[in-house]
Every structure is written in C-alpha cells, then in structure tokens.
Image (cartoon, rainbow, N blue to C red; front, side, top):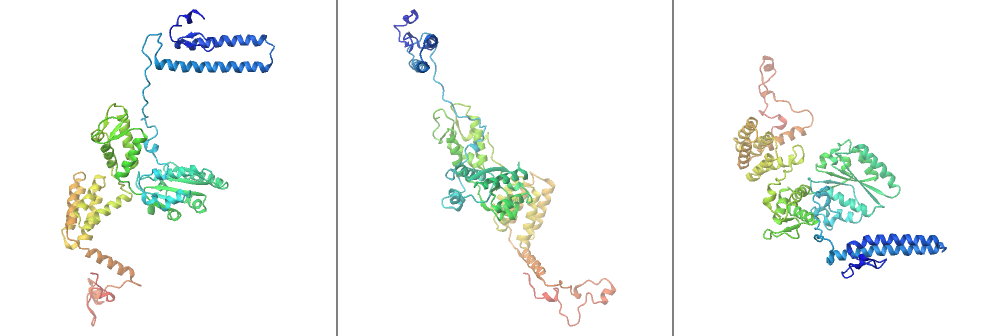
Amino acid sequence: MNAEATSVKTTEAVSCPICNDLYPPNEIEEHANKCIFLNCTEEKQKRKRSSSSLLSFDEDNISNRQKILASQKNIRDTEKSAIGTSRISLTAGPSPSKKPKQLPDFSFKTPLAIQVRPKSLDDFFGQYHIIGEGTVLRNLLEQGNIPNMMLWGPPGCGKTSLAHVVHETCKTNATKWKFVSLCAATSGIKEVQSVVALAKNDLKFGKRTVLFMDEIHRFNKKQQDIFLLSVEKGDIVLIGATTENPSFAINSALLSRCRVVILEKLNSDQLYGILQKAILYCDCCIIDGANSCIKNDRLTIQENALKWIAEVSDGDARSALNNLELIMNYYHKIPDHVVTISDIEDKLKRAHLLYDKTGEEHYNIISAMHKSIRGSDPNAALYWTTRMIVSGEDPKFIARRMVRAASEDIGNADPQALPLAIATMQGCQLIGMPEADVLLAQCAIYLARAPKSREADTALARAKSLIKDHKGAQPVVPLHIRNAPTKLMKELGYGRLQDGAEFTFMPPEYKDVDFF
C-alpha cells in the first residue's frame, strides 16, 4: 500500500477495484484510470510471452473489459454518493448546489395555436352540431370514411383544426389513407396537378389521398375546375376550407360534388375551454380572483383574466390563443407575479370586429340594419349601424341604404322620412367621418320609430309583375291621354276621347286593375 493511500486510511475513503488501495472520492477516478492502464499494459506483455491459444486471449480480454466497465460504474456511483452526503471534503469551497427546475419554453417558435390543435374529435371544442355524439360527420370519421367536404365558417372557428383531426385519422390508417395539405394563397394549378398525379398512382395500390385545400375561395371558378374530374372519379377526396359563402365563391359544379359543412362562430365559454387547455399544456396555473398565491414557481394567471381574453377575441380561437401566447411570452420573465385583468388590458386591445367590405358579412349587417328599421326596433337599428361605423364601413353606403328604407318601408306614412335620409346622405358627403357618425345614428333612430307603410314598394312590385307577365306587345297609350302639340296630331285624335269610348287612364285591357 503506497504512502498516499496510507495518509487517508483513517478517513472514510473509496477502495480502488483493481489494486484495493483507499483514495478520496475526488481522486479515485484519476487513480483508477492509471491503474487500468498499467494493468492493461502488463496483460499485453504477458500475452506476448504466453503461448496460450486465441481462445484464452479472448477470454482474458473480455474479463479485463468487464473489470474496467465495472470499475467505472463503481466510480460514478461512489462519486454521486459522496456528493450527496458531503462526508469527505479535502478541498475548500461550497458543495454543489441543486440544479434549478427548468421552466417551460415560452419562445413559441411553433405558435401556440398549432401546438394545441386537437388530435381527435373528443379534444375538439365547439361545433357540436356537426361533430357531436350521433352526428353523421362524426360517425363517418370514426368509421374511417372521409367524405368530400367544403368547410365554411368565420376565421378561427376550427376549419383547419377539423382538417387536422382528419389528418390524424389518416395517420392511424396509413396503409389506406394519405393526407396532403395545400393553401390556395400560396399554391397553384401545378401543385394540385402534381398531387392528383401521385394520388392516381397510390390508388393502384389501394391508398386514397385526402387533399385539404385551405382558402379554396382564392382559386377563381375557372381554376376550381381542376378538382372536378378528380373528385368525380374518386381519385382524391377534397376538403376545402373557406370563409366566403360557397354559393358565391365556389364553382357550382364542384359544390354539387361536396358536402357543405357550416361551422359557427365560437362563443366565449368555448374559447375559455380552449385557453384552459393551452394553459395546462404549458404547465401554467389558473387561480380564482380571491387566491393570489403562486403555485410551484409556475406562470400564474387569474381565471377572470383568462375569461377576459376569451371575451375580447370575438369568437376567433386563433386570435385568443395568439393573445394568450403574447401574455405568456411577456410575463414568464417576471418572477412571483400573478397575471390579472389590469395587467393584460394594456397589453391587448379588443379584437377587430369581423367585417369584410366586399364579403358576406358586409351584406349580412346592412341587411340586419334595414330589417331592424322595418321592424321598428330603434335599439337594433342603432346597434347594427354602429357595428358598421366601428368596423370602418363607408358612411355613404350606410346612408344610401337608409334613403331606400325611408321610401320602401315608411313611404307616405311619414313623408319627412325621405328628406331626412337624403339630408343624412348629403351630410356624410360633406363632413365625412368621424363627424358623420351622429348623423347616421339620428337617421337610424328616426326611421325605426317612424310609422311604416310599404304601400309604394308593394304596389311597384305588382306593377312590375303585370308588365313582365303580359303576353304579346305591351298595350298602347290611349289617344285621349296623349299629348297633342301639333295640328296633325290633333287631327289624328290625340288628346280627344273617341265617341262611345270609356274614359280611363289605364290601357283598356287593364281598366279594372288595382295595385293597392
């Protein structure tokens, strides 16, 4: 036993598995490496001098390897034990500290909305009218049958998420299905043709291709013809997603080959459920307003703050998750802090209202305003008018519709309504926004409260129908109501009732017609 080992005999030390000498834990590994090297050298020298067979050499080599591996494992275990108990300390300095718990990654290189997308129908929030228990679409998807579909709904309602669920369905049965995703905003006809060509080839081996075409309305109706023959023959299963009304945006021939699936705007409760799922996914905490303690040093957000995010997101799940991502990215850097409503009100602004000046929502809201005026509901008329004002609608467009309502729905029941509506339109042209907003509000309230008469509009419609349905040439104007500015016209009988003729302002064929 050497002198170095003797000096630490009285201290708890570690035995070298090769020479059985004692060493401190922080030196045992270095010694063992030297010991292994020396022993290996001696073994090699012996093998050179030995006349033993190849078999005995292999056995010695394997035995030596096992010794080395066992010694290294023993060294690692011994060091861990020594560090944990801190029973031997031959060098100055503090003992190693415990490694802090690693927090979740809040950089969100992959957006949170993509990370928490549902992978099954059970994880899906909302749209229970189409994927709830017992619905046709749910039964088809659970059976592995994927129909041609057009998913129609507002942004953030779950169209892409539903397609992702279909993708997961295809992955579970990869021998039967293949899923391909394209976006009409970034892809063209060539990409679709390439997918169709591969799909035809895969079909020979019994594998069908599901093509998900996001924003399909961005293809014009001529470009949409590329899908017709492939869908008709069953070469592909087409799933299109659009925010536009398929009746106007999608080729009617293609529409007849697909099932239109209408997705509704999500309500606040459904958005709150999605946000809860995202919070748990990121290993964060939700607490009620009365409880302000932080749990386990994790990012903590109050329940009412989470509900506030759901309420301001206007039914858009993607917007809600993006807002939550922004809050989490900012506040995870602040330790010992509970995120409250006051914290996020300045960080987030209320989501934009869903409105498209050229899309369906444009016509939906103006129609709602007109019908509210017709129904004599000043609250609703003012609400829809304000929705358009806040959304940035052209005030002249709103005023023009009010002029129409003043004549169509009020008419002679209140002759002042039409002049007021025309004055409103002229005022909008003169002063513009934002000053013209109160003009529109005043006119909407007046028209809604005014007495109603659709006599003019109804009589006009009947007169149009009479003229349209007349057989043959239209009746001539009776001579006695024609103008007679010249002598010749007077001689021809213009402006004079013929003897024996009945005076009427209507053509003789329609003398008994009453439009009122």
